[in-house]
Length: 501
Image 1: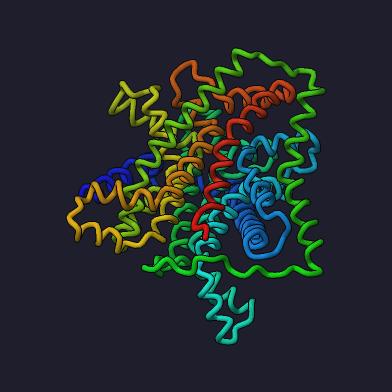
Image 2: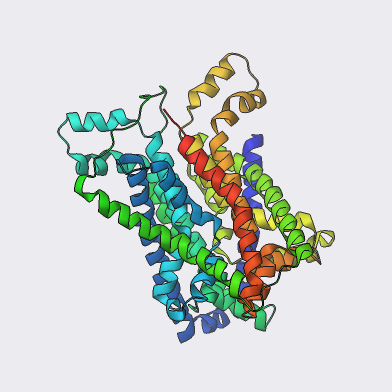
């Protein structure tokens, strides 16, 4: 009962920004709302957003699943090294990646460049859950399929793909939600979408009705994504009572295709890591505006790390009851509660921040521009990262263990601590790391919600790069990468360790 109540409270908190957007739109009236929507510019922005959304989800999924298959199921040399290289782009924020490309060539500005750069940045969001799913999948199922006469392709389609589908779909969903909310990278790549238009509206008129209407369109897109993912995922239970076969699946021999696989993997690493890091080093060395204000750099680094750690703890704590309700008590209401936590993720950070500002000023004024309100904003924005990660672990945790503990007289709270949480250890760590990475690169919500005088690496980087001072922005970008490295390493290590035979 307490878990259900906690999950409902988390869901209600998560939909506050959505409620604000809906309320703001309703106050305009149908005719005014339609007038703001039925404009050629809105149609153009919607087309750009949908085209980038579809292209990025498709490309990131193909690359993520392909890389995961190469690392986990083929005899590609040094799979551990490739795993680290495929996860490493997580340490390079999307707007830093765009900064690297744009400062080298303006040819990447436009749809093709945005599709390439954003897909390379979000590739690990699909790769990581797919690797975890492949390592968890019982190889005995594939062996049975082979024994029944199915070739490798049929086995992959009928056995492997359904087994890894929750991980793949969860990753693709995260990519889609990130694309809907992405601002910094697309602004640098000069590819206008609904999100960049919302920022422009708020910048020109702090409380713009047009911006709220556009935000409502983004929310609708988010809801469609969530429904599509829910429909494709189904309700198949993936946990099993036994431990399964304590061994790895047989690796596929690449044979003559091995050089091609190595060349393709190397090209992908060069594009996703080599280009932005090389550009960063170049501006550090030759930039005319390059400077190293030690005090400001150190202060921004400490602030960024502290905010990331606190927000990760809050988001994981909020995600636990939601995931427990969704997995252990499946049903329409539990699905609704879980889906509600995703809605704010599709909103630009500035919309979420303005909603919290409006609510705090009207209802809880002492919280305005305080650390607690900033942490709540971070948690609402990045809660889906924790939910998806923890859910993946709980899906494979046997519920019968809870029943056994209860039959032995263990109280529910003790069962949670001794039985359930150890099983969720990897998911909790992955969720916390993902939230930390997101918070360390968050920009617009930080500008609006943070206490006066708060400076993070992202806000300092954006201030310098917006003025085309690429050299001045380079030290902050380098520190952003360095701060993100421990969380990226943790994600890489946990994914490889998960369900290791």
